[in-house]
Every structure is written in C-alpha cells, then in structure tokens.
Image 1 (cartoon, helix red, strand yellow):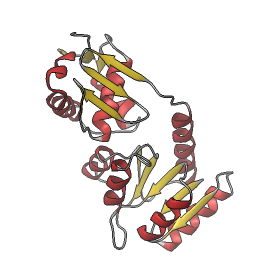
Image 2 (cartoon, rainbow, N blue to C red; image 1 turned 30 degrees about the horizontal axis):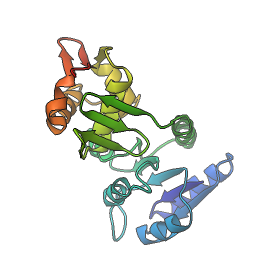
Image 3 (cartoon, helix red, strand yellow; image 1 turned 120 degrees about the vertical axis):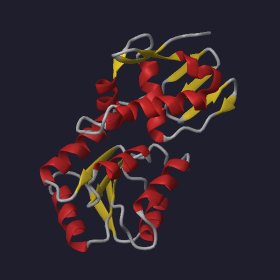
Length: 223
C-alpha cells in the first residue's frame, strides 16, 4: 500500500490513478489529520509526502514519524515543488529516503517507489558491536557504553554504511551515492559535516571513524 499526503487534488488524483494502474495499491489524503487517522488502521509500504500542507507541514509530519518507534522505519519519498539543493538537503537530512521535485515524470516516480520497496524489503536486522559502540539497524538504536545516542536519520545511515564496510575506505562520492541517493547533486562537504557531527555524538567511539586524506573515510576497531 502506498499512501500519498498531498493537498493539491489534481496532482493527488493523477498520481493515485497512475499508481493504481501500475499494480501499486494507493490511497491519498488531503490533510495530515486524515493521514494520521489512516495510519492507526494500516501502515503503508511507502509514503509520498508533500512539504507545503494545511495545518501541519510535511517536515513536521516526517519528524513525528522518525521519532515514533512504531513508524521510524516507514519509507518516505518527499514529493514537492520545493526543489532547490537546500530544500533537498533539508528533506534528506530530516529522514526522507528520496526526494522528487515537481514537476516530475510519472514513470520515474513509479520506478523510484519500486526501487525503494525492493531496497527496504531486502533489509534485515543487523547488530554491530564494536568496542563500546552498539547499533541495531531495525530498531534504529545506537548506544555508546550502554548510553543511548540520538542520531538524525542520515547520521544513522552513514554510521551503518561505515560499519557494514568496516576497514574499507569509502570515497565521499560513494557515501553520497549510498546515503543521499544516486541523484544527489550536493557538494561532498555535506559528507564532511555529517562525519564531524557523528564523531561528536559518538564521543569516545567517534575515533573509530578515520579520515583517509584525499579519499574519504573508513571505520576501524579501536577497542
């Protein structure tokens, strides 16, 4: 099931028609209150989320989802007219899995939805324990010496990517591709900023993230 939270009836009806005729069951909602009520009955496989909405903006909706353990892992694609690089960075850093700017191609949107569904379906629970660091991927839990640490969605994805490739140097370009999406066109400095904040939040375990000058970063066991 695909949910779409979009207040423009023309866009909403057009997308729902396309999705339902491509083999994807979909429901649409005009207001966040309608979406929250529907979420009590059924959690969708993917949420298409507009930013500019009545009563409550899309970023607020996204923040509430990511803060709720029951819905923290719900795949979300931002679908909005706010298409600048800055808007994209804000959306992705807030926890969106993908970001599609209006106007968009229907076939591209359907392709992205199916790609996201394949990616999330293949995810299984993985636990990492390196020195004082503990990470549970499905529960979105990070602990340092037993104390839980709060990471943003992108910081968490970045940490998991480094742990998954322990000891392997990852270039900034590869990190951007894996964490921010294949079409992310921001500067690689975005990675540097997130690495810095991630190290700070991990405290003494932050030292496990090493800089490889001129290439990128890698995670190492410093225990």
